[in-house]
Length: 74
Image (cartoon, rainbow, N blue to C red; front, side, top):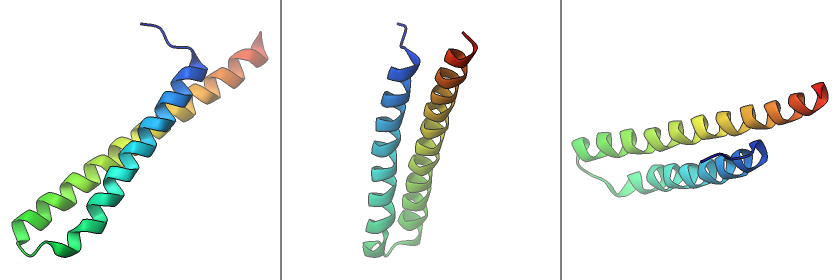
């Protein structure tokens, strides 16, 4: 399946927004956790989603950069 660079930018940005919303929800809900093991697992879960959102945003930015520089060369 081929995606255009513009579609990749849009899908990557939407996916990053979803990942960051899951991460924020995870960070906000940590105040209710009393068990140290569960708190550690929740932090790992939230940081994983934050990392995933950062990677998605980086790929969306790369696609946007490739779309701009590719058209300039043509």
